Image 1 (cartoon, helix red, strand yellow):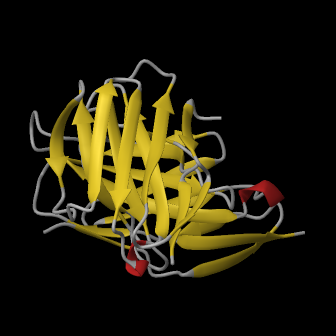
Image 2 (tube, each protein chain N blue to C red):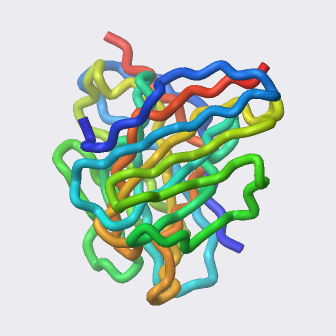
Length: 117
Length: 113
């Protein structure tokens, strides 16, 4: 069975500083995908970044980067130059590739990030 | 705006009521999903529809009944719910059922009294 673990229920960061949100995963499948989503207080889940298990490079999207360490089964999200608007819940998720089957995402419990001025 | 809308945004219903949640996507996607988000628990996938056909039912109680009349609309019909069904219900869509990115709606906050 696959599992996503986010060990930080809450994090504080000063505006303009970088922050790392931790995510570890467990799967026996060689092919999988890892995602980070942001959920502001308004409720919608916003896709941030994706890393495939066979990708050689760490994914980056603007101020977001994913620190993918396959041997450790970790996929930490790094947010550089934090902004007040980054305050939200952040969810790590994983998709196992069944091959022609449904795109099922398994989510972690989330980390609440508060950016302080 | 993600291109996925949900109505209502908030719903309070008694255990004997019947109500429906609506989701609409304006992205031309072929797959749609219902998730349940309870406090302090991971998101739980409930149902998946691909090209209007249900392809996944994650052992959801029969008091939740999904309906997908076309690829743009997804409903979740609710009847005789329990207080523990109170949660945020999120709808999502993706281009196809095996692509990477899912786009989520803002959710319906459901309270069962």
